[in-house]
Length: 133
Image (cartoon, rainbow, N blue to C red; front, side, top):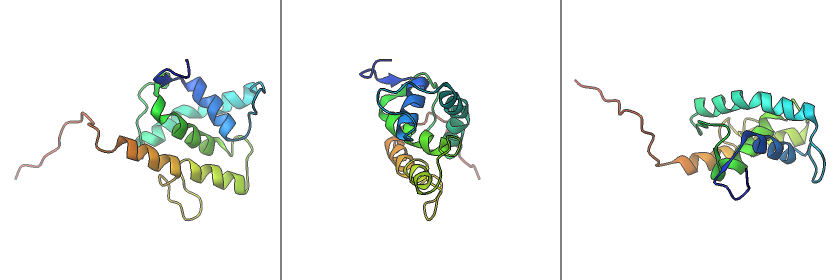
């Protein structure tokens, strides 16, 4: 999709995650294996984000543009080990995304906190649960 579109696709997300991880340089063609590796992990990452109540991506081909850069950081961090990234760079990518390395709890990474703040106070459209005594 066009960069000025309010929505981005999962292919755009994979390419940006590869760039954020340092696997894809400017002007370089994407390696098919790297693209497939990240693309195959997207569904499980989206389910994890929903399970942690960070954000729910209903349609991977219509990702809201406001979420895009944070999701790319999370995907880069979650796919870092599969892309062969290790050491300090691995820890930096994970903590920039979802978190979970060192003193940073899972869900307390920079991008995860940003997505939580964006979703705070918005209607969920879930039925209100009450207890009658």
